[in-house]
Image (cartoon, rainbow, N blue to C red):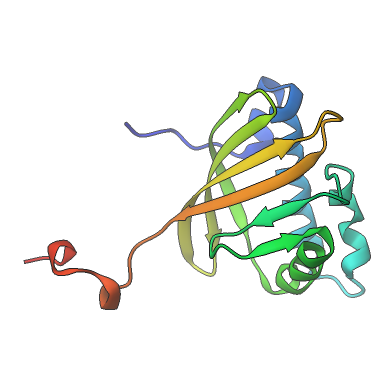
Length: 150
């Protein structure tokens, strides 16, 4: 089944609650990635994301199983954003209790990956944990024989 992709800003009116907070976090990230190309961008600009995050307990587990606290994630984003041309398209979102599951197609540097991000919220509606999962083509050098074309 193919899921039609839409721009994140176009799906905002269809959502509320924690799902809306995740979509707003995503749009804020995109805005900051674009602004990071301007002179004077620094980690302080990432305070715009902190409004969504329980910064004292935040933990992010990334696509390579790297674990970051909020200060580490801010340092990572401050280095990554100025060099990234990141954009995304919305696939779907689901909310269950204090968890939100967001699926995107993410594009950077001419390539695209499918991502699934799981946001866990605290009782105050702040992001306390974020897990990132990616789907991408397997490099030919890593493909087992069963995957190689015959």
